Image 1 (cartoon, rainbow, N blue to C red):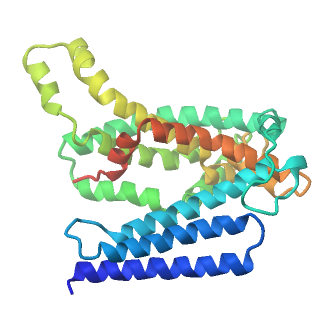
Image 2: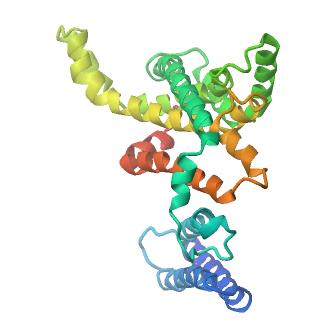
Image 3: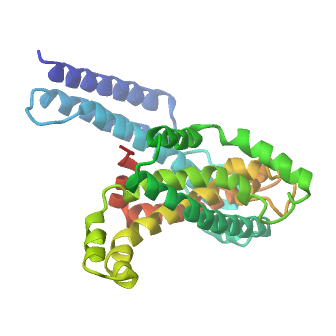
Length: 326
């Protein structure tokens, strides 16, 4: 038995066993409409296991482990989103008793959008996000261009430092920045959170910028210069049509991350004027008198821009995320 066949059989067996356990748990322990949800997930996993056994000796390049992992990822992503939707649309702001929504009340989305508690925080988040994105693009894109086009001394080590800043706990740096802003007396300023947000957005811009600029046809730019083209020709024939879409996508991704950053807003919660929307949502979640359905509805509304960007340019996003600095 070859290692490929053995791996496929192991993955198929694991998928079938997990599906069998979920099916029995759903039938014996889960009551109401959620039983259908458990059964559907179990059927998909068991069917994957059965099909995996059939194709175990296929010469095609098929990874059963990857298929099972994708199915589990979808389940662990969609089920919490489905529960959030059920909480948001439950009639009379009641706590739902099932993950699958029974009755849908759409009025809560209008209430959440018109809630004054969120409006000031949303405005602060948008202003901070726009300013942090602009600064990050102005700083990060030239740095990314230097990594890609120029021989930066110790470029790999510097790029590794950028990645390390993305992986480091941001609250460690942002807490110190918030203390400095507090000592300077500007922590109540509406744009004060820009500085802690930049700790995340600048390394993110450099990382995405390197991916966006890595495999562009730079020889086309060189050809325009060799033929005597001016900056207008370079702008019209190279910058706008080739670099422009990638830079726009980098800016949108950085803006979404800046608006939804929780740690930057968490260290600025001492003053309401500089409190960002994610931190505001965390605070009202701990308030038992505030409707949880309204918090869930606002969370779903914040998810819409990210989904729009994702479905508008899926290939470009995968291109940006999948590239590395070589």
